[in-house]
Image (cartoon, rainbow over all chains, first blue to last red; front, side, top):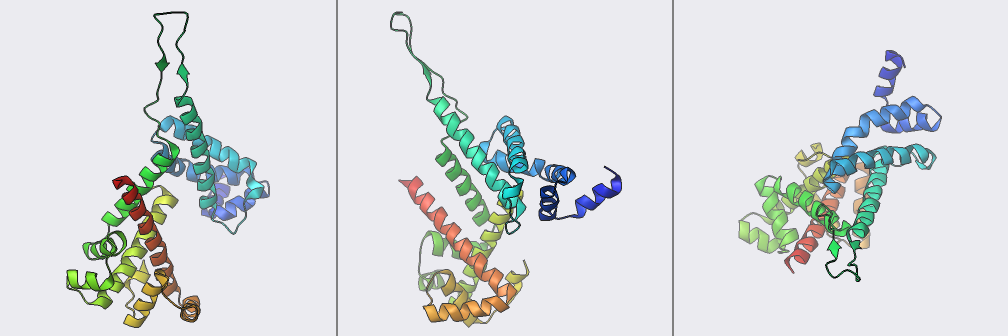
Length: 203
Length: 68
């Protein structure tokens, strides 16, 4: 590929690249791989906490993107579509691993010295628990990163479920200000979580 | 995030708040949604606030499960 062609591809949006790839331009797919390999790895690491698994999952994700290119529709953001594939693959992997964790080497009844061996993999957490752990961590981090004025009202309203009157009295702040701060605090949390999911970066 | 800087009339703030917490009547909601269609920044604030509220609800539930 010439430098000029490569430069053209780097200027295109993910969705444009995907369209080119759907039209048979393999170089567009290569550009998407170049763009997303590290981000996808970071994203998956938050979920798996295991670099080897991440490498396999990144490869598998790109393979699925390649195979299913025609199922992508431009109405969705390419990154969201791809991250969904990645998360589904990660979930399947951990379900498989969870089943493996339950496998044991049974005691040989004919041998009195034999005992049952259970080989638990301590790196594995049940899928649900793992997902919950990371969601909670991300949400707490987002909440924590808010400026104090916003954080306190959001905690009082959404976590402690106080009424607006109670918050206004407790903080000695007019009701209108409480409402405005809650609106902006919640909006900031949403944006922080979106950037966390889209880019796999911490805040 | 420009929409966070914009100063709004207290009545509009109240609408955002009530919309986020599903406290508007159907007529009020429809009227407010017509406003949202024409105001990008207000729409961004409102939808993000609603999304953030749902996320905090998830956090509250997860915390309560963990506390059990």
